[in-house]
Image 1 (tube, rainbow over the protein chains, first blue to last red):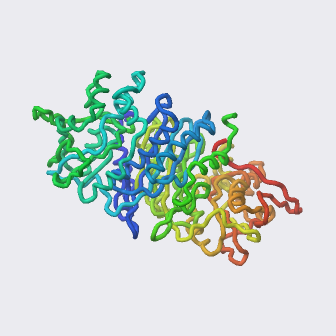
Image 2 (cartoon, each protein chain N blue to C red):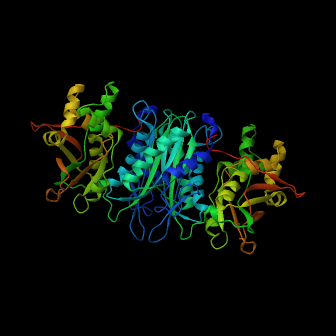
Image 3 (cartoon, one colour):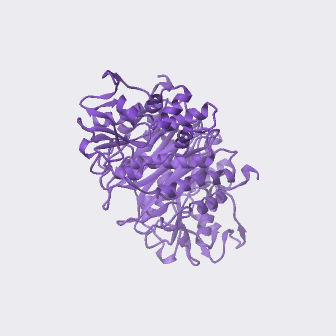
Length: 316
Length: 316
């Protein structure tokens, strides 16, 4: 078997089998977060890692940005479950040439994000490693956690938060340009994402399914479609209408289609959800629909549907 | 500032200041685990990492051993708090040349440990990295968590579980010998440690303070002494009487003093605790006493006391 030829999905299936313990968890491996029963309210648990050279390069981000992003990214999984964070833990792996002032800068970014999110960092662990990485575990609670698996045929597909800005901002930096004009907003979205906790909680009694958009819209829509055993139709016209003008302008200056950043980008930490049309929250924008079937398709303005693929596989 | 010249302790002090949020946590950074209030029972939270080339080498351990150890080591922090584990999460960072069967072997070790500990692995995350690492977060609960900070002058110093075996077992493997005779037990202790959950819970109403012994007895005793603002006297005669005969024999064959493995070894996952003499649990062995003052000393059979130092600093 070629070592690089197995996907994250295959690995998750393998782990699901090995760790299957249906009685111990309300929701186990495969959703944004796990859910375990408690007498007061179910606990919602998640863990997420940011690894240098895999998820970030220090050339594009200040250490405080790296700490901020790692914290927001982990808490975003709780936002997608409609949960309230209780506390976070972080393991920081430090390479040899990483001094006290470096750690202080990194931790200041974490602490700022934790404060904004109302999710105190109550503990952690430090270790040596060959590359910098932050692994953040978050514990939260939700009376009725919102899962990936509840989407129903007939639902609208909604998006809350910005799509594509972060990927466009990263592309802008990689092109060697200074962040200015419309690109500044894209670069900010990439450097300083925000977990949409309040929006996630406001989905209660409105959305039937939700996940966060961290690996690109197509890939995360596929997670939702697979967990819910439905077909998701992303309507290109509706999607384009939901995008920020800054994305269009930045994409134009980069000479790339805005939709590329949206469909196959990532690190948006927007919420992708589905629910009945008459329950759509004010902040949610309709970008498609849920049908019977499987998979994700993109419906072009002409009505032609094309199978969608792409996005970030954590093991490829 | 020489980058290698700062210690774990300095880093922890720095983080304590940055993350200080006294209202949000009953116990924050600096104990075996953090404690946050809940209406039913406080939650006890910990995170721990095992990194290749830092904490283990694959040459000495099967992948299943690595998965087992990572899980037991993380849960051991909960044992030291007298807590009951509810669930664990694990981030596994995989180097490029790591196939599906490798992941299956690693996860089988984790799953076996999780089953034995009654601590289901309910979720996790997979990422690429340049070296193999497992970061395990554990959530548990305890009505009255046992802290490092409760030791009082006049307490006895107790140990539960085996000291020194694991370090001797590792030294035996490094010497290139096959595990046999008394060394087999040492090697097993190193490869397959066990978090002492039941013993930790049995300390309720008996011990005043506890931590697990993972960085060597001297270093962990120093953690207890510092948190409790007391002086810990390790009595060499009592300590020697508490050691397993297999340790003595293995040390003799290796030509090294048994006490070296005990005082400055590590990865024992024994419990070090203090409490009043009349409440000593049956499984606990007395290895010293707690006095007013600061620091850790070793009292030799002659009565002479020497200041103790050494053990594993995670950043040096």
